[in-house]
Length: 97
Image (cartoon, rainbow, N blue to C red; front, side, top):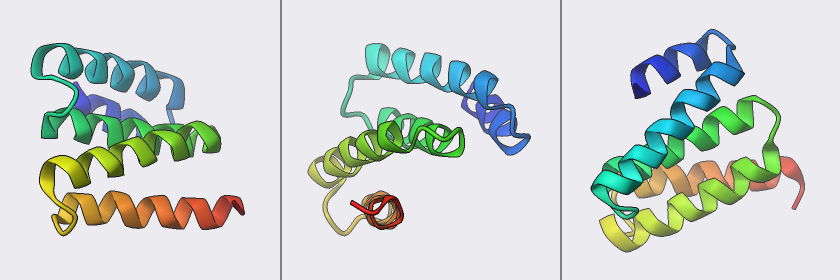
Protein backbone atom coordinates (compact mmCIF):
# COMPACT_ATOMS: atom_id res chain seq x y z
CA UNK A 1 0.00 0.00 0.00
CA UNK A 2 2.80 2.42 0.92
CA UNK A 3 4.64 1.57 -2.29
CA UNK A 4 1.61 2.43 -4.41
CA UNK A 5 1.15 5.69 -2.50
CA UNK A 6 4.81 6.48 -3.17
CA UNK A 7 4.33 5.73 -6.86
CA UNK A 8 1.33 8.06 -6.99
CA UNK A 9 3.39 10.74 -5.20
CA UNK A 10 6.21 10.36 -7.71
CA UNK A 11 3.69 10.74 -10.55
CA UNK A 12 2.21 13.88 -9.00
CA UNK A 13 -1.09 12.13 -8.33
CA UNK A 14 -1.40 13.89 -4.97
CA UNK A 15 -5.03 13.14 -4.11
CA UNK A 16 -4.62 9.42 -4.73
CA UNK A 17 -1.31 9.34 -2.88
CA UNK A 18 -2.77 11.17 0.11
CA UNK A 19 -5.83 8.95 0.34
CA UNK A 20 -3.80 5.74 0.18
CA UNK A 21 -1.08 6.94 2.56
CA UNK A 22 -3.62 8.23 5.09
CA UNK A 23 -5.35 4.84 5.02
CA UNK A 24 -2.02 3.07 5.48
CA UNK A 25 -1.16 5.31 8.44
CA UNK A 26 -4.51 4.60 10.07
CA UNK A 27 -4.05 0.83 9.63
CA UNK A 28 -0.49 0.91 10.96
CA UNK A 29 -1.57 2.97 13.97
CA UNK A 30 -4.41 0.61 14.75
CA UNK A 31 -2.57 -2.68 14.15
CA UNK A 32 1.01 -1.87 15.16
CA UNK A 33 0.50 1.06 17.52
CA UNK A 34 1.23 4.75 17.16
CA UNK A 35 4.86 4.43 18.24
CA UNK A 36 5.85 1.50 16.04
CA UNK A 37 8.70 2.37 13.64
CA UNK A 38 6.60 1.36 10.61
CA UNK A 39 3.82 3.68 11.75
CA UNK A 40 6.33 6.49 12.06
CA UNK A 41 7.58 5.79 8.53
CA UNK A 42 4.01 6.01 7.30
CA UNK A 43 3.60 9.32 9.15
CA UNK A 44 6.81 10.59 7.54
CA UNK A 45 5.55 9.59 4.09
CA UNK A 46 2.21 11.33 4.58
CA UNK A 47 4.01 14.51 5.62
CA UNK A 48 5.97 14.43 2.35
CA UNK A 49 2.77 13.96 0.37
CA UNK A 50 1.15 16.91 2.16
CA UNK A 51 4.24 19.03 1.51
CA UNK A 52 4.20 18.13 -2.18
CA UNK A 53 0.51 18.96 -2.35
CA UNK A 54 1.03 22.43 -0.90
CA UNK A 55 -0.20 21.67 2.61
CA UNK A 56 2.95 23.12 4.16
CA UNK A 57 1.62 23.86 7.63
CA UNK A 58 0.00 20.42 7.99
CA UNK A 59 3.15 18.76 6.67
CA UNK A 60 5.34 20.70 9.08
CA UNK A 61 3.21 19.72 12.07
CA UNK A 62 3.08 16.06 11.09
CA UNK A 63 6.84 15.96 10.49
CA UNK A 64 7.36 17.55 13.91
CA UNK A 65 5.28 14.80 15.52
CA UNK A 66 7.22 12.20 13.54
CA UNK A 67 10.65 13.59 14.49
CA UNK A 68 9.69 13.80 18.17
CA UNK A 69 8.31 10.26 18.22
CA UNK A 70 11.33 8.87 16.38
CA UNK A 71 13.68 10.57 18.86
CA UNK A 72 11.73 9.03 21.74
CA UNK A 73 11.47 5.54 20.25
CA UNK A 74 14.61 5.17 18.13
CA UNK A 75 16.95 7.63 19.82
CA UNK A 76 18.23 11.04 18.80
CA UNK A 77 21.10 9.68 16.70
CA UNK A 78 19.19 7.06 14.73
CA UNK A 79 19.36 7.71 10.95
CA UNK A 80 15.55 7.89 10.64
CA UNK A 81 15.36 10.40 13.49
CA UNK A 82 18.11 12.48 11.94
CA UNK A 83 16.36 12.38 8.56
CA UNK A 84 13.03 13.56 10.01
CA UNK A 85 14.71 16.21 12.15
CA UNK A 86 16.73 17.55 9.21
CA UNK A 87 13.63 17.60 7.01
CA UNK A 88 11.72 19.43 9.74
CA UNK A 89 14.46 22.06 10.00
CA UNK A 90 14.61 22.52 6.23
CA UNK A 91 10.84 22.87 5.94
CA UNK A 92 10.63 25.16 8.96
CA UNK A 93 13.29 27.43 7.46
CA UNK A 94 11.60 27.32 4.04
CA UNK A 95 8.24 28.37 5.39
CA UNK A 96 9.87 31.28 7.19
CA UNK A 97 8.84 30.39 10.74
